[in-house]
Image (cartoon, rainbow, N blue to C red; front, side):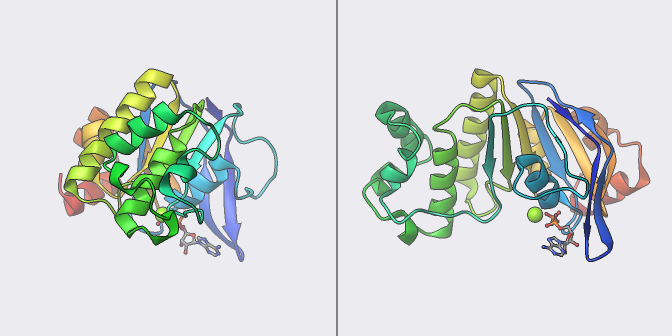
Length: 217
Ligand SMILES: Nc1ncnc2c1ncn2[C@@H]1O[C@H](COP(=O)(O)OP(=O)(O)O)[C@@H](O)[C@H]1O
Ligand SMILES: [Mg+2]
């Protein structure tokens, strides 16, 4: 997938400028950076839910799945939330098992806890096949065990569908565990990008080194 250069300005302040980038299919791209560095803005513009400063095509592919940072549930059972866009019951059961929400399948999804809602929302997204998937901090509300299950699912989904997966994460450990490539944002600028080994273990930019030192290398 090709991403065109773009920028985003709020009230006269530029919060993001992106130089454009080619992303390969079948790979996981972790997007890391401090709070407010522009990660969610990047995700929203890629997903097409927020316009960039200059309108026009940002990406070159059509089928995009997007999981926003704030998860939502429709007022119906967990199971029905998963079956909204397709009627593949077996897939729904498989995903609910994988994310340990099978026991909640009949429960109204808008009454789930934060962590349960996060698992339901990820499962709902993975009911469909996309060329590009954008996940904005999908495991932030999950505990250790369910995070591991979610990471395995994200890996399997990427390898099986051959999609390009963009994973915004607050967790460097998560990036280390499952990313192939890393994008490091600093104050709205893409400071460094490359393979996981390059960016997380041999960073070239002082801002990247500082970030890694602070958050635990
Ligand atoms: N709707 C908005 N109006 C004004 N400023 C915004 C809006 N959304 C985000 N911002 C600002 O843009 C910057 C980047 O935010 P965001 O992309 O959410 O960062 P991150 O996800 O990395 O924490 C922040 O300074 C934030 O305050
Ligand atoms: Mg964010």
